[in-house]
Length: 300
Image 1 (cartoon, rainbow, N blue to C red):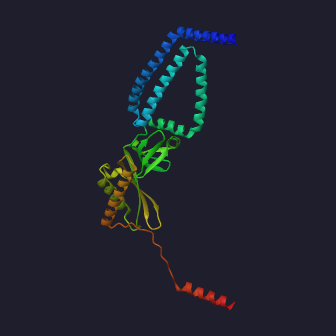
Image 2 (cartoon, one colour):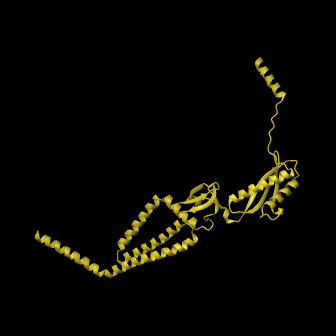
């Protein structure tokens, strides 16, 4: 028994001496690995500040800028960790970490597929020059001003002041109309005048009214005017003109103003804007036929 204890104690001493020798031999590598880790930390902090400044020049969303800067810092730190493990000859541990990271990444990706898709879509949208905060856009059946783009959603403020929240993935996968990309918008105005109207006078008066109402329309010749059809109670026309506007709200205001001024001009000139009329006729023949039918049914 005493010999067994003595042998075990000797083996323990030899093992500790072996570990101590290994530590002493690897002190330079350990110091170098620590230096690499500390250096990677400070480099990551510096890189994070630089990336944040660069991204802020292109992206207005602070949350997305911070996320991109943090990802850059994490990549630098992980690179330093892998270098430090390689210096310490821990290649097997490095391989295990990479394998574990791959499996964990796959599991997290499957579990958070929807969230990650919205996150990456938000990053892509933020770097698009044609979609900026303050633009008036129309997408997925909604129209309004872009007030926020973050890592999860795309926020619009509609003309009625309601806020619409749309997932970033939906924005990226569907068509989007941006009214703010151009400084001009065309207003379409449909109307009709009575059959007794002087059509040449109607055209001239409409063009002059539009030109006098909007400063952007220099002359009546800049207004497009076309008669389109003989309607049930009116001769219909289409009027088109350009205005300086970047949102649908400005376009609606311009159209409303044009309708008001045209109505005033037509009233002053005695031009009629008719509306559909239905005439109901009751005569004795209908009553007589009903009486005859009632008599026939009664005889039968």
